[in-house]
Image (cartoon, rainbow, N blue to C red; front, side):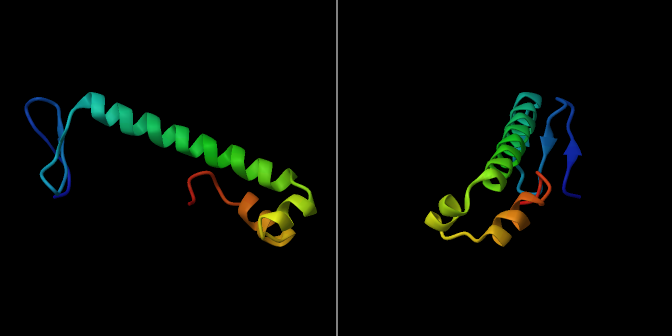
Length: 74
């Protein structure tokens, strides 16, 4: 079993790491921030000019494909 609850309401992973509720909350917050950043970066990429994309070595098609990804996709 990869996750179990102990008497202290902490979560234990398969590597025997004990996560406190505060640590779990921090991980959730960081994940939400990462997803927001991805979303914003993809919108910016979509709005870049061909010149800007060319400077980064990205084609318009690549930018379009990346901008269509969901925020949770790396």
